[in-house]
Length: 153
Image 1 (cartoon, one colour):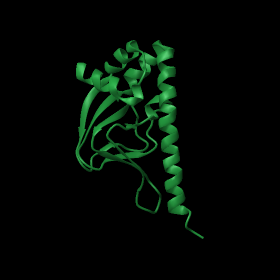
Image 2: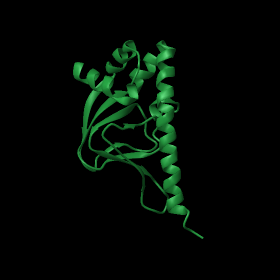
Image 3: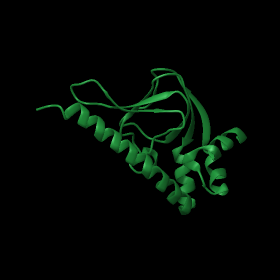
Image 4: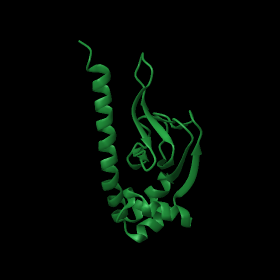
């Protein structure tokens, strides 16, 4: 657990987070590994975690009816993946697939939701931090869709 705590403390996402909150969060953390091509999650399925990529790359994909999946964003070391665990109905809105061998820290969303219900200040801190992750993903999606559909006349 001490190694996980050190990684979280050093990550920009958790910068300046109170020590007591880091203690709560690390209790919900575990190391995970995904082989190239393996899905981290699938659109429409239950979202109960988020990931901090330590090594590797992950493609965020959008299913487009009648076409192949569109990669809307590729995330790598240091990036955070997943915000759907934070807000009802707790389902994934995209697919995520490891592009190469990826090692990450998984944070259990159910565990964190419980801790956020008990400590609203922790919940507010996480919500503020995830709102920027959400904005980045929406902007990446918008730009990718403009690229795909914007050239049609």
